[in-house]
Image (cartoon, rainbow, N blue to C red):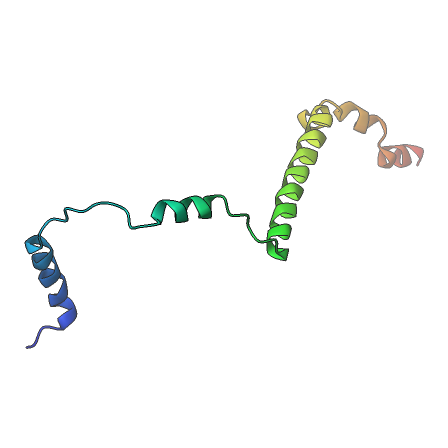
Length: 99
């Protein structure tokens, strides 16, 4: 039975890597630092996708702020402090008491 080449490729490559001489020159290629600095300070191109992304993050922050403010404003109702007010203004109880 013949072994497929994909199963023998890895052992052959690891043996070849072990036998390879160590690299002595570890310097960056010519112009590498200039290219990295140029890419770091490059202004991104204005596009519709970038604008939509910017506004979506701002909308998410505004929605989160509104949610936090509304929970803080209605914290008493959320914790159950207004149960007696609902019992007093119960229109069904008023109608049933009339009959």
